Length: 267
Image (cartoon, rainbow, N blue to C red; front, side, top):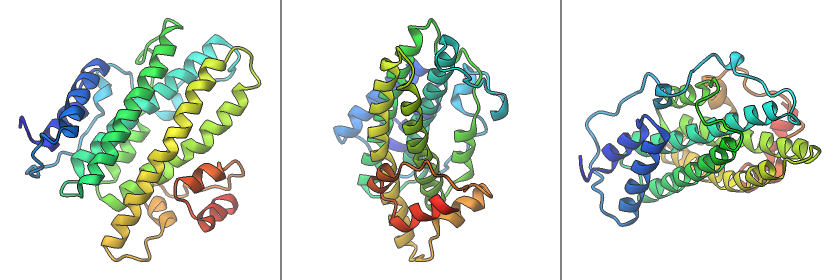
């Protein structure tokens, strides 16, 4: 296990605290960059029943997670920051799970998702550090496990890359831009805006990496009818609704075609 990449990734993926995950990942990433790992596939790839953060977060139904009703209030800003911290922490595991679950891939696949995990870890700590200035830390507010469930529902590469980077994270490009515009109208939110702008810019790159591997997987299977909308709808029926707030430029930079964007705008 000591030098097996996939088994080491699993230890970081299943770490029970943010501090443990941070230390494990940083050590693993450095060894990865130093080319010190053996990439022999593991005999069994586990499908997880619960997210690792269940050890310190109270998980509730998505509809019961506290809603941010007033972003001008301290309470509204705390709820917003905690929600973003949870997304970023979940995103670390999404990237690590891609490294763990999809074995025998080209080395550049692991380079991409280890870089994404590193970015998401940095995003998480930036948000959590700001959250702690409100005397709140990640885990103090109820969370949902929607991203974890989506991850476990997509055990093959094509649906995973379609659903996680190209659907959920791409939706985040839209939501992030809208949130920044809202916050610009509220005094004393500059620190939150600055962090969201960093995350938005770097998430474009993450969605783009997902787009590359989605198209790679479709071509490898010689499945030229690889319909993005059908793939997502198969996992989450009726996922697409007309959305006039699409972040068009960000999605184009991330690999979406004009045809896909037009469909999203007029679905």
